[in-house]
Image (tube, rainbow, N blue to C red; front, top):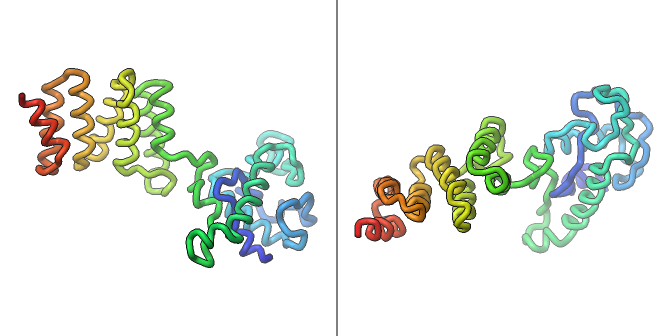
Length: 248
């Protein structure tokens, strides 16, 4: 099996780190040691290139997977060491995806060359959770304001990178999930208003804010929000039904 094939088969959920992030290629040992998932015949150059791909896919450095014996000293990295758990996880994921890409995925997709790799899921993140999941967890545990703050931090750092989906549906999912619990209305309103701020032309965002305000018995606020939705989409069914109810 060629390294090109192996690279194509990198784990979808891999927790692999880079071998040479910020370190000259010559730093990797000429004698490759402790190879457990790569072919014993792999060359140093091929291994280095694959590790660079993994590094970019996860947005990490060498010491994510490889033991750095002296903190901050890249020259002290022991590439052969199995001390860090991320390295073991990377091997498991790499093996899993080799098996997936070798048959089940191409058959399911109906495409002979169908394959996944690290970046398929990680998208530059070492923990590849979706945006709605990250914000929801923070909002539930720390409140709506904390969820808003987390969203802004992620947007400032990752917007345009493809790591997260900053479209309106991500925040809408968080808002609706929080609103399903009566104790989560305040947090839901905070996230809903954030969505309206970030995506003012998204009619559904205004509608869900109106629904939450109605549940909080803020009729004037609900009417204002639903009217904004109807300016954007005059035939919006949910907005029309809610306005009719509020007008009574």
